[in-house]
Length: 131
Image 1 (cartoon, one colour):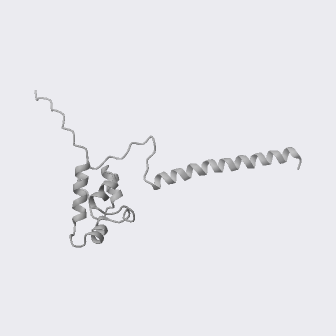
Image 2 (cartoon, rainbow, N blue to C red; image 1 turned 90 degrees about the vertical axis):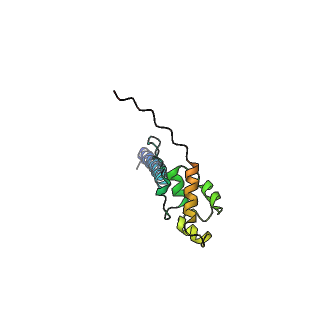
Image 3 (tube, helix red, strand yellow; image 1 turned 30 degrees about the horizontal axis):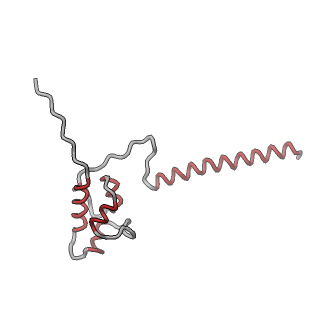
């Protein structure tokens, strides 16, 4: 193998390593964005929910915060419980752990805080008079 062939082979290997690194990083960032629930720049954000009666005790605080557009910290502060160690617990689990004598109190407090933290609903536009 002469030096020209050796140089060409090394250049192809280097190019292959660069391509693998480039596409590997793209795949990693896509996985990370999907795993964290992020959205692509060109995609519109999901519609926010507004009906607090749809909140259930199996939901977690971060899930509710994302669905209703309320900061999770505000919910933890309203419940007066630490955020650390409680992000993955359902409202029912939080109720059993922190308020065992008051069933359903966490669910009701979260509904009240979410309802108060939502922006006001804009008034409906006036309808045109019937001819």
